[in-house]
Length: 191
Image: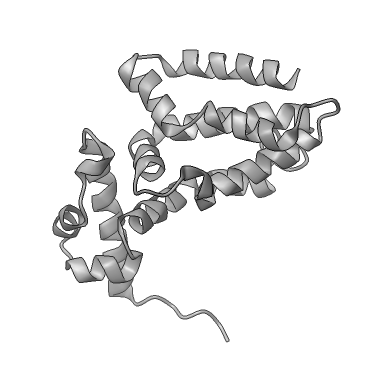
């Protein structure tokens, strides 16, 4: 049995909701400043539609992030070097970290909302688990590398959304400088 196709109006509503949420989160001074009511009103849909489709605010943010990160995930899973799976681990880990930092810089408002929203630990979120597993497995492929599990956690701590926001937004660090610092940090961790 083939998967059920989404109705055209439901697909339009979904796209309208995601576009409205994206605009609102980008314009908001804080991730908590956007409510489901705000999104429903901006998208021109009922609040019930929003909750049926996404479950809750976190589900909405996750759907928006998944849409944004899909090309990066594809490059990591199937693409060429330096992100793709055939890349030697010592080259791939720094490339993955640089790509993740760039993604979070380009999507600061969403990354911050997702990582700081709700009472759940960001370490239990699906996106964190995916990145941690990817990095851990890559670090395991580097001869002499330290404890792969802990190293993956430590590397991901360097690109937490709240830190990225603090450096880019609070301290005004240029993206190029942040990328240089991250590259140096990753090199030291993997040395």
